[in-house]
Image (cartoon, rainbow, N blue to C red; front, side):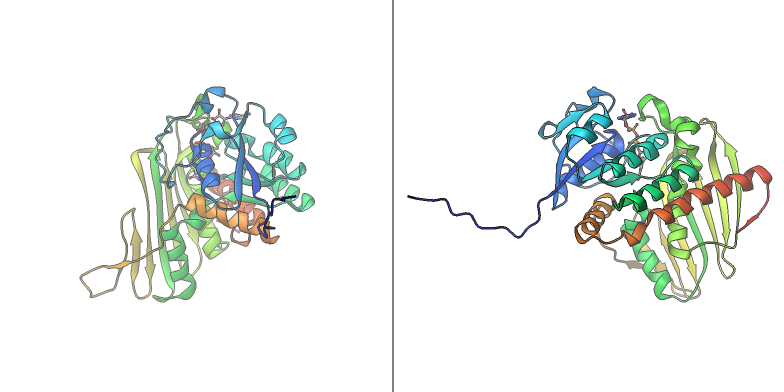
Length: 344
Ligand SMILES: NC(=O)c1ccc[n+]([C@@H]2O[C@H](COP(=O)([O-])OP(=O)(O)OC[C@H]3O[C@@H](n4cnc5c(N)ncnc54)[C@H](O)[C@@H]3O)[C@@H](O)[C@H]2O)c1
């Protein structure tokens, strides 16, 4: 009798993954899941079933090639049903910020690893509960602080750590844009759901500064209340003793811009979307710094997937660190309200 020979494979089964919140970032992450080896997208969930219509969304995020086809997975309008039925290993939470804690904690308690979009939660108390849930359940939780995986910011961190151009003396970071026009039910422009620009947008740079330089000695911030009802334009200064950091964030500008300028003892390194450059005193021409290519969203996903596979902690972006980021934004709000430096 003829038998069918099968070759035993040493590859572990793929991680069964889903996206919860299939809006702007949900689309980006669904593509990331489909493009990451070792991950099998099996489901998406969104409250609004019209989101499941295949479409070519136009978002201002360069997230790499689109590969995900929503028709190839199960679709749910209720995340609790998805958690019960879809047999998930990994959930990507791309919901409005006020839902991050509830859904992430429920997923962790159901035994599912979680990649949750930034900001970790609407406040530090909820963020700390998420970190507790990850510790209690032994599941991996990582917040999508994509700047930690953004090639230019990674390259700058390398220069700071290695003191390639001497010690860092000053750092200026900027992230400005206009009010979101795409968010479901306009949740983004309601500070009770998004935290306003200070939490939603400016937090990116606050997190990166904490990641690279640790906790400052003191923080001062000035800000303007905007259309969201929260702080939608902010300038923050972090005092690190031998170096000060200025971070500007706003939803009050026309057009999106993000940039950094790092002043070292022997050179200035800058980036504003094009080439990353280094300028040395007395040298007229700026030199280009070559950086790796690739989508930060896919890199963070691949990193977390690797941590899950190897059973290691996501050291590049630990939950306790991202709780501190939300706390730092809360200290900035206090500084704005009190018009005073806050010493840490
Ligand atoms: N990392 C980044 O660069 C970046 C950029 C933009 C947004 N974000 C973050 O991503 C998250 C999502 O933002 P977005 O811009 O994609 O918003 P969005 O409004 O485009 O998408 C959110 C989706 O969640 C769905 N939703 C709402 N409540 C739900 C529920 N109870 N169950 C299931 N689905 C529900 C909405 O219908 C919508 O489709 C936010 O936390 C935001 O801060 C991150």
